[in-house]
Length: 91
Image (cartoon, rainbow, N blue to C red; front, side, top):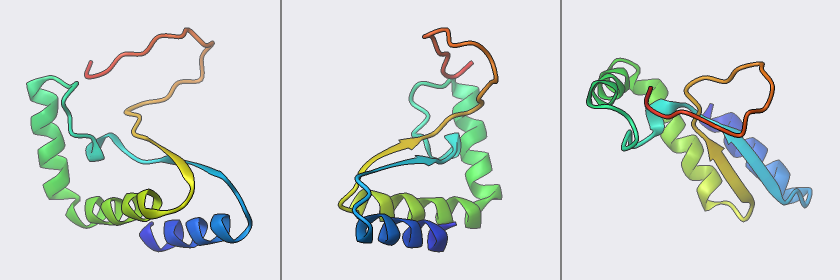
């Protein structure tokens, strides 16, 4: 993931793309908005999927260091439903 992300960032910068929206994962979240149980689960997932987690860290760092305007989305779950204007975190 990190190599592909670095290539996307370079291509965006080279071709004057201004903005990038990157879909990451909730495991990269600091977990502050989650319950204690969910924060423990995040720590366990980080250990179990250590290599994948580190790759996401590198990918996000490449985006953050770029000249792009960026947003990193760390959604737990997305649904195919009508817009409500509301969201839940840490449920």
